[in-house]
Length: 392
Image (cartoon, rainbow, N blue to C red; front, side):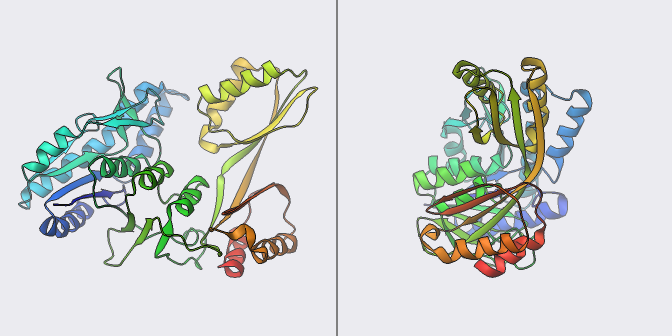
């Protein structure tokens, strides 16, 4: 009998009314397949609320303790759903990340799953129970709670699907699939029926809040089809698998949640540069697009997620007080689709729109499946819509 993994996001389990809708979704799967594992996120904006509470106590909360705090949100969701399913006559049991045997590395806030001991899950499935697992969390070698970073429940779900050799993993949310661009940014977005793992990974890496990038990597590695679909609409979603249809644009991502950083300090040495970069890694700043511009002075530029700004500012203040730094709020627009590098029409149309709108470019990256452009300011959504109409 096939095992199926379902994942429900925070908007899907936001309140008791929506929990009942989720329960009906689960019932339809349970009636046709008895081996069901359900992964849940925290309800609504619970995680954001917990982070805000922690920030009122400390601008840089202790990361171990923050993980302990944040993991409580998913535990509330799983227990409430198990109570509801049991009342509806569907035997269910809730398991925390560690009860489910999810083992991670020692990184807090952005841990990586290293292994899953599914023996407890298999035992409960064999009893005919629906197993509800708290997403986003695991346990490290020190028996400390860890969390997997934003969107980590997606990774929990696909990792469990891979370990359990599930036939598929369905990711339910308040949107009915993956769109050609963010429908919250422009009304011209269209839903896609299929995407390749590579295309979906590029979309996730560029900041689209559709699927966690690590879940796509796991899906590709173990050949687990991922279906992104709506909790609230009875329509087909978007299937992510190995199928590749090349030569045209599938998606455009506009990411405004990044900062461009320019850092200068007198005197340059390879040792100084390496020490600084290791500090970036140790502090998990998510540094990307790093450019070293001088061999005489330390003169580098890079991007970081805006949510990492406080950590960067603290690092520079305490360890590099002599460094001069400046920051820009920028947009990065990424045009994604297998084989588009060989399609000159895409690049020509893109550059014409940039020129017509007099947009100032910081950098441009082009590869087989992506054209990524960073601009010196936040780009209005009207430009995204213009690109979408021209390219998709």
